[in-house]
Amino acid sequence: MNYLTGFHAIEERIKSAKSTGPLLVAKAGPRARELVNLAVSCKIRVDRVGTFELDRLAPDNRGVALAVEDAGDSGPDISLEEFINGLGDQKNALAIILDEITDPHNYGAILRSCDQFGVDLVISRNRRSAKHADIIAKTSAGTVSWVPQAESANLVRAAAQLKDAGFWIYGADMQGEPVYATNLLGRVALVLGSEGAGISRLLRESCDGMVGIPSMGQIDSLNVSVAAGVLLYEVQRQRVHT
Image 1 (cartoon, rainbow, N blue to C red):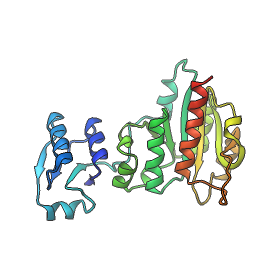
Image 2: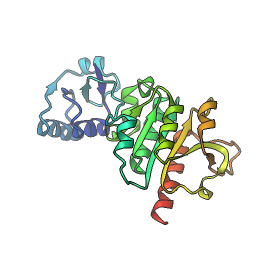
Image 3: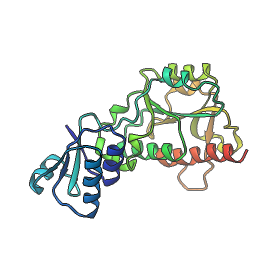
Image 4: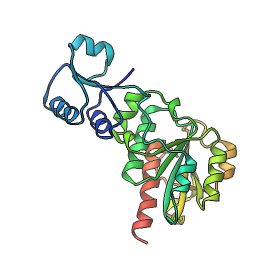
């Protein structure tokens, strides 16, 4: 059993109807009472527990914790095939391919940006490789419960499937073409690699181009989650103002 302890993470998980609980409460402060009322309205059991017991089950709690049976890092489950088949005549679509993003803080922060900028699907090789459920839920401010995610055992094949569906694939690289100079209208997939190794060679070779964020700093790279937010903003800027 896993436990979510962040207020936003618990709230969004309850709203998403993906948890059967129970909600464990040791200290009923104002925010905890709001969560209790929400749980009751959603027919999720609320258990009063002692502080010692809650600390044992969920050490990083703030007086409340929600029990979840899964790894806690999955959003609405969908296969890549289902996603593609459901596009129909949709001209604009935005997908993200995460190549070995295993740091739970980065993973959660990326999901938060994906929610804010309307990403239609997040694809990863194995999103449960980032098993820190509570960290992901907290960092994503609960949006992990809403962002559609798909797993693929072969990201190169996933990129090929997206291409067959009319997607242009762009890899994120600080040496790539400035992102604002790249046409990001239509069906687009952005590939984000790990901070250590970047995008794997075969997946990089599958990209139609590389896009970067011009930098004026002394260090020539951005944290991958920060870069994701900047790139996604530019995609939406182009779509809104074109």
